[in-house]
Image (cartoon, rainbow, N blue to C red; front, side, top):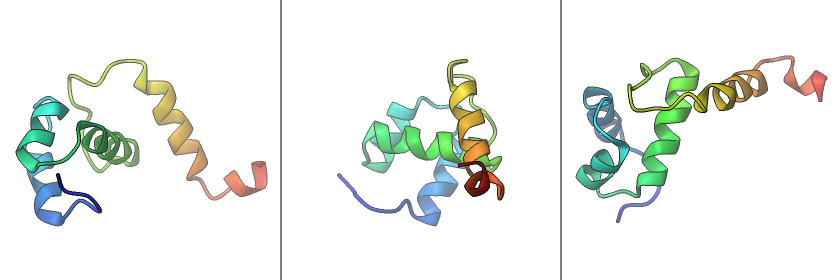
Length: 78
């Protein structure tokens, strides 16, 4: 199984197949499902990827937290 950063080719594969289940994408890329899920969540939160239909509603709170912590004023709020 691969480790480390996701390459541009892998990122493009994920973008093209975003509506596949993250387990299937992980199998195709020979990566762990958790690493693919984390990557997709991070990219969706940043707005780099559309939200796949299989991503559940509980992710909304996680996305809001991610967006808040990457705002320039976050260090001042802490």
